[in-house]
Length: 426
Image (tube, rainbow, N blue to C red; front, top):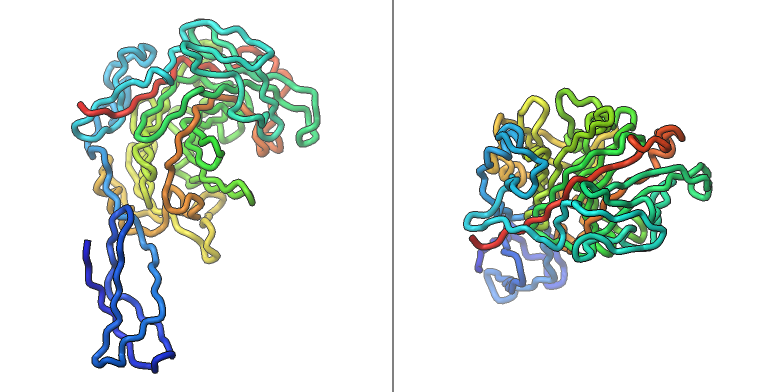
């Protein structure tokens, strides 16, 4: 590619320099580029150029998927008369590039229609040994969590992840929480759609299905929900994490819209527990590209994180398009405990064009605003992890009671199925 960019400066002597700024922005395509810069003047002595630098302004981004939503994505599985329990015939609601089709990845998909008994040793299980019954490294859990091999089982219909009391006070000086955790034996990488059907543990713990890179620097949460945690039980947190491990730093979207709620649901724990007659919700992430994530709940598209902007469907059905920004010190801006965003616009139906404009008119990334991933976005293959955990802030404010931990109806998260699809040529 070629371009012209004119700079205007004045002669100041051969070794006395002043800063000159480009009059126009330069658009560079992804990949290696050869840049040639000339210093020219009105005579042979006006030629000296000491140095130059580029300042990144924003991505030149275009969504690789169609802007059109399926009828399922507009209003969910139930609106189309679909039974989400019949996963073998359930259509994929996610948007896909023209000329592509969704193909199931059988190495990761699982309907849990088999039995695996809890065991005190680390074990592979599932058809083809899809899973093992622990975290993806030796760490045994956050906060007061102690992940245990024997808190995982498959009952012939669902995966069971349970919790119980651990009397040890070695973590945070309080009695701990035994909990189950499983990890996939194979990894997923964009473009990919991962969806699960889950019934939360109705207890003051986090019920999680998530993706995590082997080096623990990139995380995409499919669902993070708090079944019995005061106030937060009404939300599903649709988020991701960009980490630096040393010294530890963590960015995740924490704007108000990232805490997604639905009219009529005051507690997702109560909703899915349903007095012991368990309900399931379906939550999926379409990891389209390194800087493009789409979230689906019960088949309905509810949130998109796209380059430099967010799009979220509110309780009233209105889509809002918002832009993150940084504070005066260069950190993530906050307002009343939530990540601060600028409102760019809204409409009654999702519009890729509106989201594109919101992204193009902002120069702060919604994926990684502090540039922990070097501007590349999320590019690493990830493990699938399913677990319950007692996070540090829960220990401090919402630790579950002994009675709840001993109640098998409430202390267990159930997973009916998880499915993984990738787009392939049609």
